[in-house]
Amino acid sequence: MSTRVIVVGSGNAALCAGIAACEAGAEVLILEKGMEELAGGNTKYTAGAMRFAYDGRDDLQPLIKDRCDPRLARTDFGSYSAERFANDLLSFNGGRPLSPEQRRLVDQSLPTLHWLASHGVTFEPIYSRQSFEKDGRHVFWGGLTLAAENEGVGLFEMELAAFKRLGGTIRYGAAVSDLIFEESRIIGVKVGDETIDADGVILGCGGFEASEAMRAELMGGQWARAKVRGTPHNTGDGLAMALALGAKRHGLYSACHATPMDLHMADYGGLSLPPIERKNYRKICYFLGLMLNAKGERFVDEGENFRNYTYAQFGQKVLEQPDNFAWQVFDSKVFDLLYAEYSFHDAHYVEADTIEQLCDQMDGVQGQAALATIAAFNDAVDDTVAFDPTVLDGKSARGLDVPKSNWAQTIDRPPFRAYPVTGGITFTYGGVAVSDRSGVLRDDGTEIPGLFACGEMVGGVFFEGYPGGSGLTSGAVFGRLAGASAAAQGVDSLEEEQSIAS
Ligand SMILES: Cc1cc2nc3c(=O)[nH]c(=O)nc-3n(C[C@H](O)[C@H](O)[C@H](O)COP(=O)(O)OP(=O)(O)OC[C@H]3O[C@@H](n4cnc5c(N)ncnc54)[C@H](O)[C@@H]3O)c2cc1C
Image 1 (tube, rainbow, N blue to C red):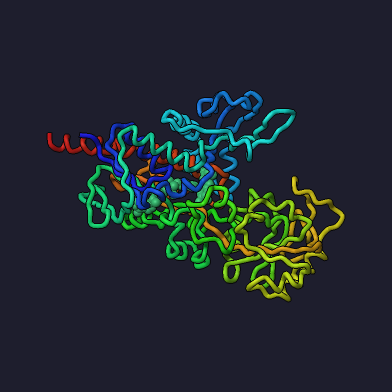
Image 2: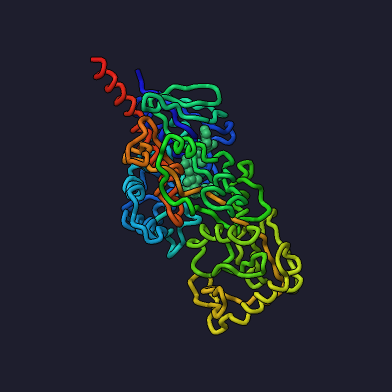
């Protein structure tokens, strides 16, 4: 009899678990909370970019869909060593050493990408965002070079097709509500009143970013009002079920990936919108201007570093302000530098010919205080340094309570614009502790027999930020491991039963 494995969720992590379990000979059922349109969770909202360590072109070639693309002959992919990947993760660890989960992510990243390719998942070089043209060649700067064909939706579709080809079954609209634990092991799950038996259960059902109550309880009250950039279904169900069975909390619960977003966007990411429109609710050009809170005060160094290194943390900073909002203020000197998301048809902003009129229009802001803040900032700008957004230009405004370290230009050329923003949560970092075969661990370090976890459920992978494209790779690495382990689990328990019987 085959081992029966249930996978909870149908995002990238869960599908990788399902594929690996099928591959190992198990009979696999995926239970997905969402109806078919919303299956695939946050995975479908992504650009499909996946970060992995590689030595050079030979490592990438087997992954690329169109190997006849004439650009390939003129492309320098460079290399991205395991050491660089580890250092990139470390740079967001706040002084913590590389965790065992991060070590696994780095070491298994390339083999896992090749494994995905062996199941028909294909990739494309990210020419538009990760390379530049130099002397007629496309030069990647390393790190993030490939994305799944057709982005997150394509990744989901290719993985689901692979899972079905291997005989896996999926049920939509099937929210797992409980785990059944009897005779010291997991023996199945509950979907409402229905009981479904299994030899192993894999939780691949995301973090708790879409639960207002869990965000407030586990991360702090300011998170209650955050916008959710992805699926409404990742409400921490798997985390709650695992914790109820004594699973150990692991990782950083006080931090998450969150970016400044349009205050008036919908509460959740809209899958019905084309991907480009979904992305446009993000507002991350604060480094070209100022951010003011309800008291009319600045609260971050908008020019602390390139936005790649600050945008995933500044969502939290905005949420920490009174009433959880801020306004981003720009003058016309930088209008042509603002990303397309600022001229998007559904971008909300106010415009005025004087700073006084602008401050009057910024809802919820103490206008006089805002005026004084802008005036003090203008006085502090160093006029001796030239503005250059392509480098850390050192053009600063100092002597203020909150300095601006780079790209500080006076706000003085009309017209002026201000955009209202809040914090949008992408995904949570806190999860459960897992063993080196992705089994869910209790506080005492023993596994809960029959229970596995992968994807956003696994704690200890990210701490105070993450290098882009690592979330999907982490889901694939831990999903593959959990699937293989859960399939073997049934074999283990069968062997146990046989030895007891004999
Ligand atoms: C807008 C956005 C852009 C992103 N861009 C990138 C990127 O380019 N690269 C990258 O690496 N990462 C990116 N990320 C992060 C990435 O989405 C996540 O790291 C990854 O998708 C998580 O995969 P997962 O399988 O753990 O969860 P998900 O893909 O979210 O899947 C979880 C699934 O579990 C289901 N579920 C929840 N509860 C239950 C239940 N009780 N029963 C059954 N099913 C349940 C959900 O419906 C969902 O389908 C992005 C995230 C967002 C929101």
